[in-house]
Image (cartoon, rainbow, N blue to C red):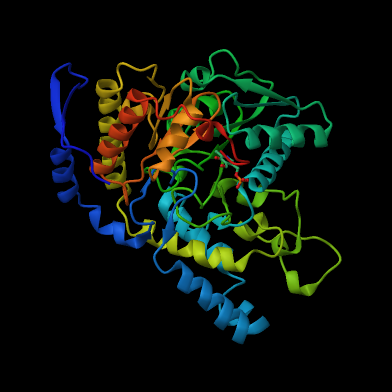
Length: 437
Ligand SMILES: Cc1ncc(COP(=O)(O)O)c(C=O)c1O
């Protein structure tokens, strides 16, 4: 896709105008040290893919890896592949790779199940630890704007425990301020998503964790929107537990398994509520009594989707080779450019940037609102520029530095300008919603 090489001037934080041209963007792409990673992902010709924060694109070699698992490991190796192809060890092997990407430390992480299920396990284990140490604590705090599945899982767990547990929702501002009004000696657990999925607001893991610990509560971080998107120092932050998915910024594939990390000091106190045989100390003893494995295998439950897990490994391998600081630097440069261009070029339209402008509070996406957001996104997708829409009115654009460049950001905002200036969104076809938005 190409657009005319027009000059935009936009205000930078210092207030001086910066002329930005498409040629400037092309130049920045040519000098981009991460450009070499583009070939590791397969995208349809002519597509600008700004939805890697929801489903990362296919990794090079993923179809071949799936073919190998089906034809060789399953087809020829048959049941022997649990040993010979290393299927049994995949959750821990992949967990080690995730730990490297999120600063978890060796022997701390497994890849397994879904984020929702891992949250259930982690929250249940955390509440049990707290019930032993501080039985009066019965409140779970989480963000009002957390991804709804996290809230639903906590509500379901509280109801299941039927022991006076209560889930309280807090605003993002309260989290950023360190819980000045909601932390108390009633709070047992705080569950926080590291980046608000809708606005892209980032929370400081270290200071927030310290504030929670000062209040005597434990914390679980949901890293779905940050694992693979920015540098994380899980172990260094003092966090207690973390969960996250591999299908967004880590390019694991649709429905690829999630991960769960537990701080070393808590590992053998982790009591598994879904105590399936994969978490047993000696699963093949087939003993009638449950005895948890030592260490990370105790976070497992049952048999895993080996095909999905095998393909997910390719995305983890790419991210294991990348300097996360370089990713962050480019991600912020991309989102700065996006925001500057929106400010300058869409100024005549009822568009608002809802992603924080301060780098310290910004994840790897830009979200803007428009009263006809759904139809506008539909018109953009028709042109091969794929972002997504979230209620209410939010258009989300995931910025993934390994395969998105500055020119694509330019072209996206230019396409948006054309769609808005000419009301190209205002057709019946752009107002029809599918099951997934
Ligand atoms: C922040 C966050 N948490 C949890 C989930 C739920 O993940 P899953 O469907 O894998 O359980 C998602 C899904 O997009 C998410 O974005």
